[in-house]
Length: 462
View: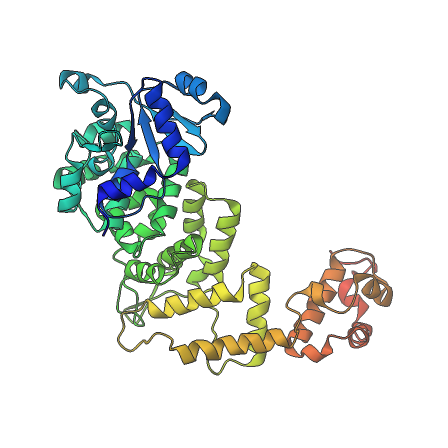
């Protein structure tokens, strides 16, 4: 494994970074590599993002880098983008920092969230500024707030979620004082204006090996009930006779089983059975959840509150609504066609449907239930591909008949009645795809009773 200094030195090989540092030093300013880049280097990880910390003000940066189209993007603190590199201006020292005699960069590092993120590397002297013990916390596998945890949370409640994410990401333990502070302040995560940032923390967590650790920490700290109450309420809900785990555990197992490269699909896995709380019925002393895939309101309310895009919400909704559709070894060709028609209606690919089905099957601790074997998966995929290769229409717009032809044959005006005729034809074609020819469909329309689509006055029924 490369040493942290070697990793940090390699960052300087990137011309934008070295140019920015040299320009700042030449201008008489201090400049350090800070935050996540230093943390990752100490963990032996090549940093993805590079942040530069300086005592230059935004107006100084605008002047120094006038030819590089600098963009001021700071919100909670001053950040200027220079050639796509974030250059942060040090935050003013707070009263406690002044009383403690801290100087830059420690004054800025002391305002950061966690000790592992509160270190800076001086590329000139190749020395580490670590005033709060971040390196020791990395060595000990500890997540700890920088200085007073209550002060850090008061400044930004989202830091509680970040503490859980970093603990889950690196397999660290949250230090007891930090854990207790989060438990005491968890209610503050409902602060207005934080939804977008909480959403980003959730999506970032989906890239972990096992995001379930993140959700477990959110529950244990009392944060989950404020962030995703639809999931939190499943914590002690027995999964019923077909499962060897609670509904909460099942959701986490399924989410972990989905690919990290598809974060929104994975999030759907963590939420796919949250409707079981609303669908719960007790029969013969055991929990059952009939139609739970239709109970999506609580989940969708959570996603809307967290400001997920309509595209992402529609996708998650489709995955949840479709995940219970059976696809077995003995599923008939007709049933497969109906499955594909449902997926078409949900705007959901068969690939993502299968991914969810495979993960759902895998996420079960009942010893009688077994995950799909490779042969099981190939068999089901084959059934779908056979239906697709047969060029079966999977929506009414694929019927080989026009609306104007239906109008002419039945002497109907344009309107909803035409759609009803198409729906009837589509049902017949799903049963027998060979019917989908222009001549056959027109013959079927001629056999229909026009009065079915008109009222007593001969007008089309809307």
